[in-house]
Amino acid sequence: MAEAEERMATMDMPAHRRWLEAEGQRLLDFSKASCLPTGGFCGLDMAGARPEGATADTIITARMTYSYALAAMQGLPGSGPLVDHGLAALSGLLRDAAHGGWFEQDPGSSSGGGRKKAYVHAFVALAASAASILGRPGARELLADVLTVIETRFWAEAEGAMRESFAADFGDEEDYRGANANMHSLEAFMAASDATGDTVWLDRSLQIAERFVNRLARENRFAIPEHFSGDWTILKDFHADQPDHPFRPYGTTPGHSLEWSHLCLKLEAGLTRAGRPAPAWLAECAAALFAGAVRDGWNRDGKFGLVYTVGWDGSVSVPNTAHWTLAEGITAAALLHRRTGEADYATWYRRFWDYVDLALIDRRQGSWWNEVDADNRPSERIYEGKPDLYHAYQPTLTPRLPITASIPGALSRGELQD
Image (cartoon, helix red, strand yellow):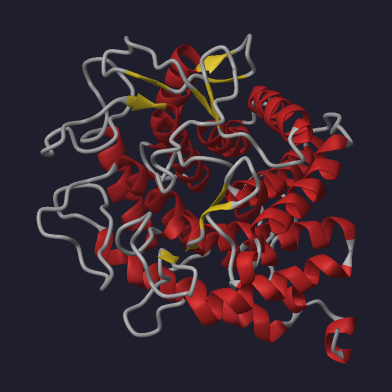
């Protein structure tokens, strides 16, 4: 380390924190264009414009509602009305009044509403939790609604995990279990616990982490299997013909290991704050997941970046770097440094932000590139257009917060440091 960085980690330097704040505001300003006059939010193209004929997407609407709720908690102008805009769509346009639950997208779109997915409902719960903590009108009712749907339709108590998806009428359950939906459910459950004060959501978070982290990841060199049949048989060849699938790609996903890593530390903090025992394996596995992710994904085959996926034989499956993997890596490195004090994590924190600055930030058209190829050129192989706020905005906040179960909970307690 340089002499100054021996005295103070980068994340604690005043100038770095001012940079984080400015970058967060830049992302918030860019993303306001995704607000649809007809309700909800949509994705933006590479230039930051709404595509012609764009309709509301439930995941994007929930993520934007959540992100602007975080901004509103900081008193940033324009954020509160955008939270209300998102809540209106989640409570009306995107909710299935006939059968309950949430469509994947505007049911009036050309592709229809789609299936009822655990992944979608996790983000609705996350948005409703943040908006409830913020105190926006209708948010508590929305949160109660989505948590009821999760409890009665998706949560499988005997499995300690989430069912994956159903038809619109909640028939035709999919014979599949997925790590991705359960990971985001864990995140949403911790926010729900902060919003409601009900620690049952921490208990369920721990059940999810026990299965996926303490058992499955530990059994697989801390590379988390992503795909399972309904009886929890690992499907190692799942989507071998679709290696670049945006939600269910073949193989293992190093970026998800980074995400699980910091979620373990957040869960440890949430349990401790609630006066509940926090198993020692949470911190142990957080470190092991981080090590596994950089072992398998960072700077592979002489290239610079974090690969999207790795096959079960250890070879790179998709070499592109997705923006969200760096966002999760920044948070994981920051929290591990806070938790352990180890200088190596501070080095990774700087390394990841350096990569974001040099390869992912689009200074001409705004925001970050959603992904870049193996030579760090903008790509749309996996994802189209510019990303929504959710992944990129959070690492501008987490280095300025203590380790906490949820960002909205910490912001509501005034724990953000300038």
